[in-house]
Amino acid sequence: MAGIMESIGGFVANPFGMGDAGYGFLDQLGEQLGLSNKKQVQAGMASLDNLLAEANNVSNTNKSLYNDYLGKMQGMYGQNAAQYDSALANYQKAMGEGPDQFSYGGDVSQFYDKFANQRAQQATNAMRNMGGQNLFSSDFMNNMAAKQQALASEEWSKAYDKMMQDRQQQLAEWQAGQASKQNYIGNLGNLTNMYGQDRNQLANAMGDYYSNMASQNNADLQTKSDLTQAKTNLSMQENSGAGTILGGVGKVLGGIFGM
Figure 1 (tube, rainbow, N blue to C red):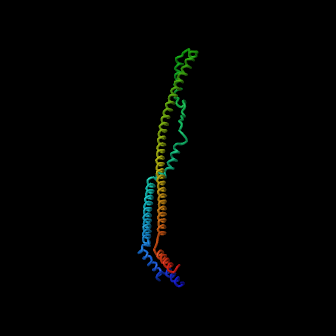
Figure 2 (figure 1 turned 90 degrees about the vertical axis):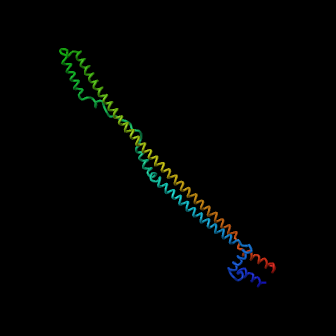
Figure 3 (figure 1 turned 60 degrees about the horizontal axis):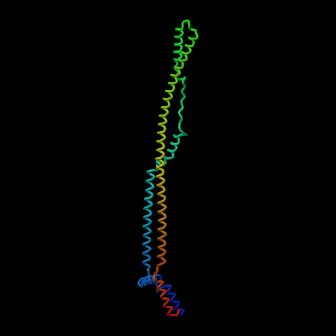
């Protein structure tokens, strides 16, 4: 009995004395008997490997498109977006701390006719020449004072009107300057807004890029995980037929020898 068992052990360890070829013979025999699915499993694994290679190609193509998209967005908006900070600083500087206040430094005395006193003196002398013996009378003195006051008032009135005309002219020039300044500030604001919009567009493009890349990476990971699990499942289902045949041989021998 011991010799028979040794023979059986030797056969199992080395079927037909052919080493690995013995198992190859059993594989072929298993296939002929319909006990082996090795070829089908290997073909399935090869298909999964091909599918993984194709998925990697699609992933690389998508990533290339994403990079091309980002490059074009940077070309379209990158330069303007980079100028946003400078434009904003110029805009804030032009605005200043608040609206300008008009200030006028003129004075009536600046517009008083330098010949007014001379004309007043000439008028006084004319009155004296016409006064005769009444030169020092109270009526004459009152009339002369009234005349001088009237002349002075008239000259100051003229000076005031000239001053107001000058003030109005300076105000008009100041208002024109303010309008030009406000137009300039408005243009700076529009430019800043334009650069800001470009910066937002670039930020949106960057967001799209990172979102697409993250989605692609997640999809790649899921694909590899699914294919790896599928290959594992196929490997576990593989049946070469050798084990089945040897198991059957063992049962037959066991029945013969009461094992």
